[in-house]
Length: 454
Image (tube, rainbow, N blue to C red):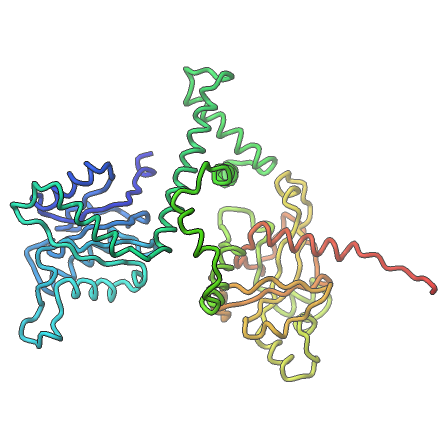
């Protein structure tokens, strides 16, 4: 339980109590929760860096050293406290010596400050921070200033000035606040229900367990087991979370960004971002803790022999069918060499949940580098998913922007309980793209043709 609460949004890294005590007191007076890290040694550091930090105050000299040694030590502590895959983070360099030159022997215009040295050392040690950190510099208060209640307000004003015009960051933080409120709303709702008129108020904890068990059972249906229960509970709770977000009383700080959110003034930048955003909207990683045949799972590992055993034809036929060029053309040959055959599982989710599936239904298609996307075949027998950034390499097929093209004529059913060894789960399509493929295939399979005389 305690580990679930270890998610601070503010952190102070400083070893000198005379320096860190005033800022901790100031944060406490503002009712801002934070975690304090001394940072003078690696003892007492979190076992894993914090992912939820949004504001970090750090001293530059956490030991008696200075210059490169101090920068290296502070950067090492920072890396152990702040996760490199979280953003945005405002980093306040909290030091009396931030502007001091590291080497006074070089010309003034070439002098690197203690703060600059720390930032360079940190980014060289962990490139993942690039573009994620917003650095500010704030001088520590002198002794006669430490009891001045106004000095912390100066930090707040400086942060406001630095973030002024950075609407995207403000919108993200507003969204996080809204999501946190929604999460709290789900927990409060379940707790209130567990203390309602139909529940024994003296058995609140038992009632909460019963409520969570009911949600898990309803989501899992016949697929419920000790191994699958956590995933089913998470799925059910996420649906309650969406309900909280959809029915929020207000959109808080997001509403103040309505004008630029609704504008369309940077087409080139948006076009560059679309594949990366589609990667999150359309795909997710496969889980090793669930059964292999899960709807939406994309499989690799199909060689010529395996493909012929499933479909009675070679891989080249699928490759050339999905290309809109003449089979003997140079472009078709290039397409054939660059695409990779895949299978995707599209069995109805209800059959899976109710353990009524006897065979897994798989469609064959190709994964295509996006620079060849204009060569993809179109028409009723073909379905193409939007371009997205492939986040997982497989064999010699590297991470890159891709599209998926499927042909309804290449389908196969395999026994649900028998997963061929050669099928390698690669990634999963999310529920709605999977449902779209399922519906497209069902619609094409149900088309009626008949003979008539005019």
